[in-house]
Image (tube, rainbow, N blue to C red; front, side):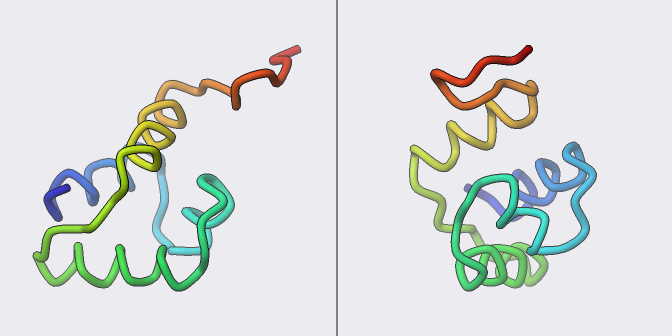
Length: 70
């Protein structure tokens, strides 16, 4: 994923800190911090396809599969 794509996702989600990514995607703090650091440096961010799908779901407010929304 390009740095611009990642930063746009963060902006869309209203995120300013790696800790918010950790909570949203349930990824490690180290991963989230590395992604933010790389993106801010203009480097591509190494995001697995499953995490990219979770990012898309989060943008659209979709709950995890099998979880009730009510």
